[in-house]
Image 1 (spheres, rainbow, N blue to C red):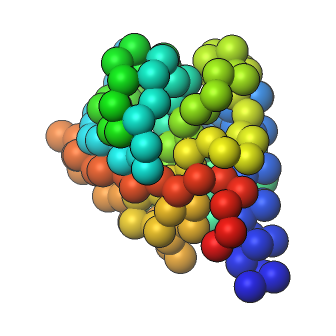
Image 2: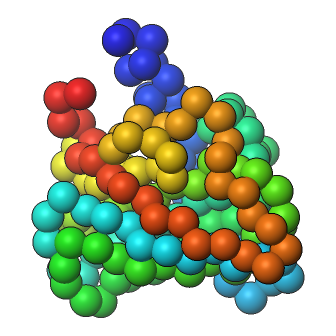
Image 3: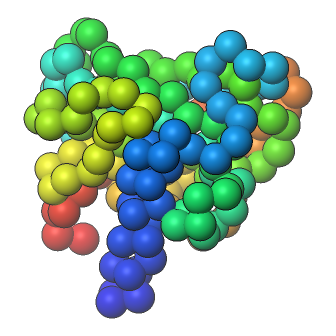
Length: 157
């Protein structure tokens, strides 16, 4: 359990660095590459939430070099799910994650989103805030659709 908690801290530290530093390489909408889309599922309704989507090539979330695409946007509708789309993702197999600021503490800019207790965090192929053991979001040249379940960051695991 202690090891899992340490891994999760590294993952989320990397996510914070990713958004704070603008990611590493590639990314965002409008660049060449494939498009990923899908739905982020939340445990409760949110309104006007800031959403961050990240695509990472390696398991070392804290090294700042694995991120290949990122996008931050404000979800203007309310509900317990949020649709996303991110283009400019090179073909490959990646970790795919989402962060949803449910209390409005982030500015909602790719350079300013952080994760605090109570925010939603999720990974494609993971369980709530727990990431998958290996990259599993396969991105073909034509793009793909992946749904991301979330859990509440800081909740008892």
